[in-house]
Image (cartoon, rainbow over all chains, first blue to last red; front, top):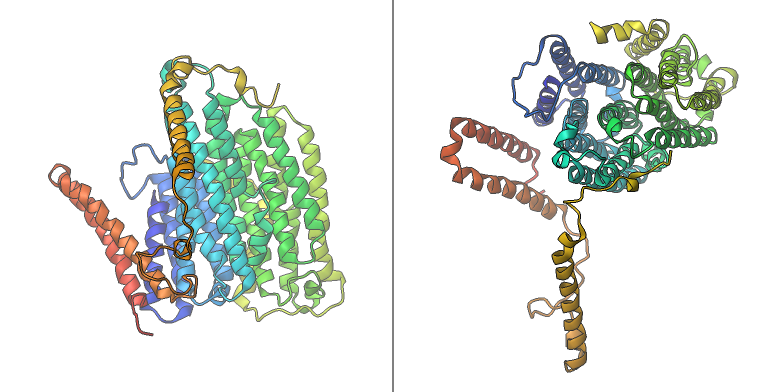
Amino acid sequence: MNAIILSAIWGVVLMFCSVLIKNKGVYRHIAALGLLVILAGNIHETYHGSFFNIDTHEMLRFSRFGLFFNTILLAATLLYVLLSGRDVEKAGGYVAEYFTLIFFVLCGASILTSFNTLLMLFIGIEILSIPLYILTGSDKRNLRSNEAALKYFLMGAFSTGILLMGIALVYGGTGSFMLEVPRSAIMGGYKGVSFLEVTGLLFLLVAMSFKVSAAPFHFWTPDVYDGAPSVFTSFMATIVKAAAFAAFLKLFEARVGDTSAAVDWKLLLSIIIVSTLLIGNVTAVFQQSVKRMLAYSSIAQAGFMLFAVFSLNDVAKEGLLLYATAYSLATIGVFAVLIKMKDVTFEGFNGLARKNPVLAATTTICLLSLAGIPLTAGFFAKFSMLSAVIKTGTYTWLVVVAVLFAAVSAYYYFRVIQAMYFKEGDAQTEEVTGGFKVLLIAVAALVILFGVQPQALLNWFYF
Amino acid sequence: MPLLNVLLTAAPAAASSASNYFPIGLQLLFAIGFVATMMVGTHLLGPKRRTGDKLENFASGIESHGDARQPMAIKYFLVAILFVLFDVEVIFFYPYAVNFRGLGWSGFWSVLMFVGFFAVGFFYIIKKGALQWED
């Protein structure tokens, strides 16, 4: 509750800053301050309860998992603002409004981690998406940015239509919008699974797969991630995607058990997972631009995160927390460097190690984490996802497939590392400050810390 | 196990027996039949006089000139969308006015908060110069 209310209020505060404060450099400090306040509020709520006492009529339910997820999202956003806040100022003319929209996205994200009715799921998804359509098109004079925004908006609107259709069908089948309906209350004590409910859940599966860019609903992702200004791509690919996954997990955790007599969810999800891994990884291999490669790699990573939705057990929940952290940290780190590059193709990175060793080293650590190399956070994230699958006891071949595709992913991540260290070239970067380098080193240190001691993160979840 | 065996689970008998849908089916048939009959009837029976005037777009009897699809100042859209926003605010006042007494103070504070949000938004657009007509 704290995160939802405070982030909405701070968004409005920033809106007014754009009117009252003319100095553009101040906005990112206000945004960072706001994130600290919201983060503190959310942590307070996790352990001591909310500042606000509002009767939500059971439409929102604040679980430990959701609140902890909020903390991760907020901390990642704070890191993002500290690292890339300066670049938000270069994205376009309305700097304070961009930060405002980021706060509104966070409001939607914290609804997604706590919804208890399908209506709140819908509202959360919309609050999350609509600011993103604007952020995607924030580079108004750039044709590709415009194209990306329009494409994202149209496809997003369509998927929202499917989501609503699904919610309506689930309502038709169960007579309730609540996430968990007592089965005895449905249709006057009728015991079977309603055809409408199952069809509705399939629609919801499609809509949620679209939001997390799982194949075959991924087609918007490369164009949108490539066309949007890099700063906002970084935000979209990390925090937003993680929030959508939290909602995905929450939704299916509540519904799969009752309907598994009617649909083989495991088979359905394993088809989605394998095609996501296949399309994401194989297409990423052929990219020439690092930015576009990262867009495809985010599809591939979504495939891994889908294992949480697939297994739906305690290990999967922990794994998603770990994965969201590892993936967000690494991707924010890589994007922070990418934004500073003059040329975002693989050739643009040639010889970065000689020119700017700190940037090259931190990027390398982040890329290794994305590939899932041991001693980085990505390794334990992937490990816990796969052990969640093993724990379900079925579909163990999925683990083999996943490991094979993780090996494929190493190829395109290492291409960047190879360009930085082993190729001659003159990598052009923009001016980087000392503070930026310190933060990058901190990100890399966190990646390694969670890679050596994943319990350092998860212990907070239990205490 | 088949991917989908929804069709095997029977729907509850009371809710979906075919006879319950009979009136709806009848209405559907009647609606389609009525429209079809009328359209075919007018085409067959009505006199046909084709003149150039009839092919013009009808705009309240005034002669139309030019194409509507031309660039227009963005300000019109801005004013239009802001109008819609504040129009919707007024719509919410009607049910509140009817239930004013019943909702008591808690209702008053809720509506005050709602109006407060709008006032804040209004202040923002004024300050941003969204309603400034002259450049």
